[in-house]
Image (cartoon, rainbow, N blue to C red; front, side, top):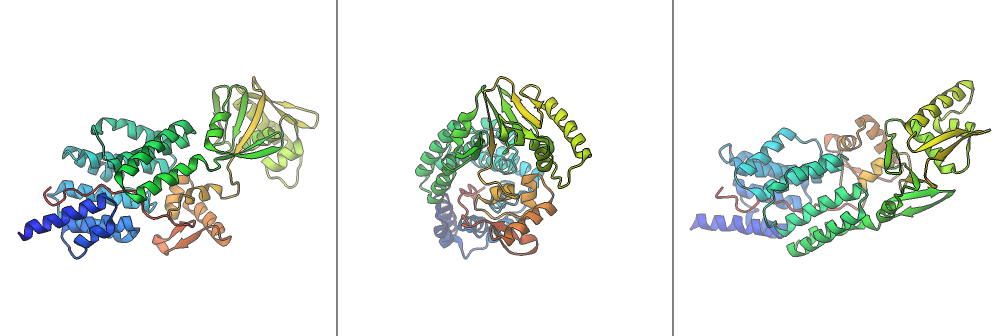
Length: 414
């Protein structure tokens, strides 16, 4: 009878976690130290926001299960990975994670396998690797059971919406968020509903700043998407690219060329004096003949890059941008433009980030990211908690752990 009671407590805790009730789960297993109880306690602590304690409990559970209980250990590993994702620790042991996913699939745990693959895609999305995230979802579409639980449907649609938002596809993002809201409502998990509502705010919040003919205004995601037209040349300062007439030229690795085309686009249809181009693009305080020579060279390189979209013509006092086939030129910039806007954009998700995770997501050195964090902290725009390797950076308000962990049900008999 005691064994049956133990199993019933584990099952009750698992049901409570699946319903988003971590306190109810802890009431069942808080005083127990066996492997299934440790795993469920870890998930409960994650849902309550104590990610450090959650990680320690899940690691203890994985050790307690032992090598013969491969499925349970794989579930613990995936749960720990989700805790790491919530803590914005993006330095995953990818081979070990893939091995855990393969174990889930081999043992027929398709729901947790789908959840694990979605976690990997979310990590890629946070790192700005949108195409890889999209490919990861598509590559494992065959794993999807006929009917997913509501919580897993909501999480998956949130991921689809995140990809669509980064693709500037407002229609697809809205459809995915509607599906996510319906699924979250069916799940009855309040935190998941709140996560969907937060994500939906991206569709009505300013996504970019439009500058055209000396005027500027904020645009939503749908308005940004509606800008695309064969008759309009778009200089995109969010992605450092120039788009028009179905073609696009990336200047992400050519900052001087992008600075020049942006200056010319902001002045269009007027020209820009050579001295202004040199001062703003080269940041030269004292202008001499060497700067003028360099300007001619860089303008030549810019012409070569934009040859399918526009020309840069010389005028009496400077240079002017001449779009080919387009009747309008606009500049898209970030809603907030400052020196460390990219760092602030990542911290705006409300989670706490380590400097190493920020560097990984931005593709920058950790030293340069740390300088940016120190600068932002001095102005009071961000704050840090912890110290040393455990130091994390965030912007208030701090959002709790909202996604559901699908580790439980049933653990003891695996």
